[in-house]
Length: 49
Image (cartoon, rainbow, N blue to C red; front, side, top):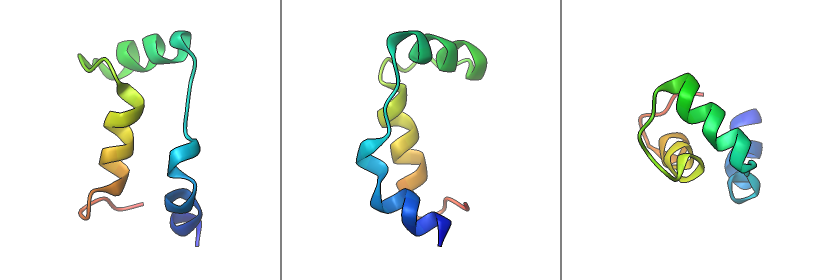
C-alpha cells in the first residue's frame, strides 16, 4: 500500500537547491538531477520498497 502511494505521487517529489546539495554530498552522487535519479531508482522493476 505505501509503495502504491509513493508510485502514484512520484511526480510530486521535489526539493530545494540546498536539499540537492545535501543529497549529493551525503550520498556522494555526481548526478546534477538527483530527484530524477532517485525517481528512476524507485521506478526500477528491481526496486524493493
